[in-house]
Length: 156
Figure 1 (cartoon, rainbow, N blue to C red):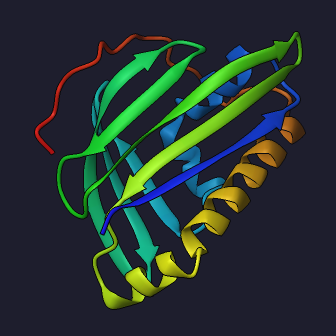
Figure 2 (figure 1 turned 180 degrees about the horizontal axis):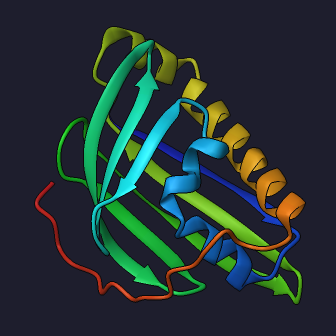
Figure 3 (figure 1 turned 90 degrees about the vertical axis):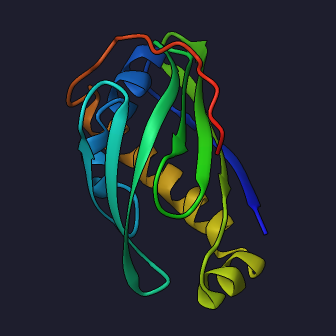
């Protein structure tokens, strides 16, 4: 059973600020519930540690597409299957729509029940609200990576 989660939020910062902050993966625990740590191993590879369904899970992901100020896409390479993309759309000089789309495959019975009850959807909505508060309260990004990653095909 694969679950698809989609949501978006408008943030009151320029598109480059929202995008640049999202490239700072190691700051994710500051606004993503349950994420304990994110370590960027190189330009394309990220290691995640999160508490999911009451237990600690670890997995690796690969950035499959990255276009500055537009899109970042990823796919897991180990652990539970997940993939997705976050898109950035300028709505004016100081406004950006951040849209997140994810596909996750719940593993345990607890995760499957949580998904069926809509917990994943609510969590993404809350995390996007926290991202909005995080970036708007700062007014600027904590760092930036403006590199480009071309799309690649993955068997997963």
